[in-house]
Image (cartoon, rainbow, N blue to C red; front, side):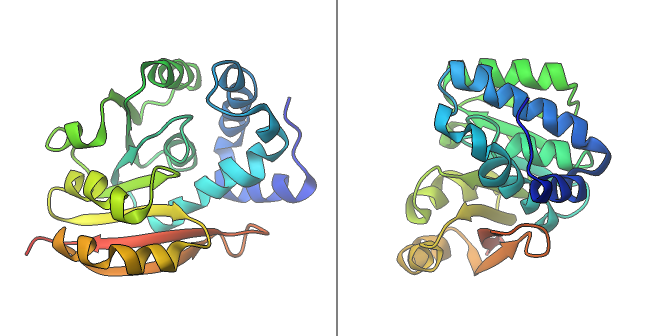
Length: 212
């Protein structure tokens, strides 16, 4: 059992509410089979809640009710499964190219009984036109300039990209400016999620997209 600190427990309760038991079961999967199959490094276990699960789940506050969300490069379900657990009203499509990761995701989704999750084994660019979504999420996939052409086309011309980033967010936006505009990005900003919940809130690059 991965123990939560008092601060993590309070944050988890606020974020997950009556879904908290599901979130705990997900973390147990990360700490056991997730490590055994190489999806998470063993050194991450003490930080699973603070650095990974809570850090991802707070992004849910930026997403409209009932939205269809595509999570690119889901890996261990970060942020896709965190969002699906925290927000049962959302519909998540997890896009992941590696078979062993897809197999693990399928097992976890089945165990948790998440009816609002679909998993597609595919590269992001191959999923364009096959996924219906108004929001695309990504975490630790690549720099924004490279990430944008892989993610924004999934929106079909309208919606928004939410990319979880770190301190380099502003610099990445500056570098990717022309690429974002060419893809229909008309407003790009850095937003902070979880400010009133987490000791270290989450930095997100939000790119709003519309057809020209």
